[in-house]
Length: 82
Image 1 (cartoon, rainbow, N blue to C red):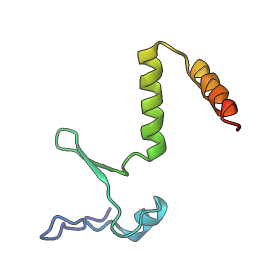
Image 2: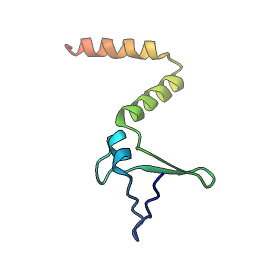
Image 3: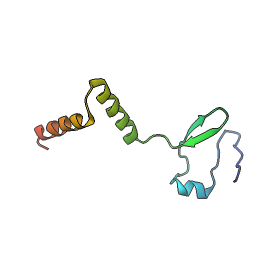
């Protein structure tokens, strides 16, 4: 295990093997979670994850199933000539 020290700006350099494994490029932003003294770095959620969470919340708020919501979206799409 390597322990790269943070720079004076708080920047941490991840080992190349780790960056390559997770397809991280220079300047990539990561989310830092402090779990009671244990730090966890993770990539920020993708827009797809965020949108999926929003759809799930809307389904729950409307008391609809995902299937019902998808059917309504398909009908809307067809109604617009899709």
